Image (tube, rainbow, N blue to C red; front, side):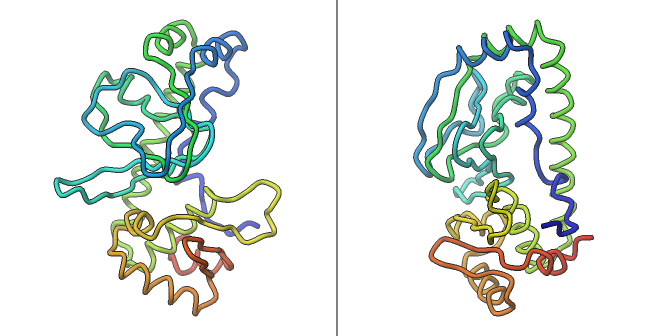
Length: 233
């Protein structure tokens, strides 16, 4: 159901990078892909380490985050199945600028650096797609910083729930409330607030009929009102 919220401004488009590649190029990359299973909380790569390939999220959800010296996390993005991870650092030949860890049990394909760069050198299609996507990702990060910079904690929570709503939406269930299954610590990290503050705000949102909760689940009941609370038009 349309809500008037410009969700594309807050989502990467890396799920489109491998789509539309010539068949032989896609088959080559798939043949070199090694699948690994990650448990919830397990790191896929860590900030400051040197990339030796790229990652393709086949199933599950992954958080991209930065941690301070005390280990406190700030989640900067949530990846869905179909998205690529780790390729900007590989292309820049720099260490990872953030870390990535599974938010739930996930299947992740790894393509070693030499195989990926071989196709990149040969493929004008892949080069163009990566350039477009890198530009879009920069815009997404700018939009996120700008949107969160001057908003109240209540507005930031509403905005975060709207973004996550699209991440957890299931095809074919558009008429059912979206269930966001996320530990409170991770949601607080996304919003940038203390867990205690998050719990209080969620209780307020429940009283207002915006959401309902069950354990770690948060069901979005009224997305249109959340857009108003987020003060985003």
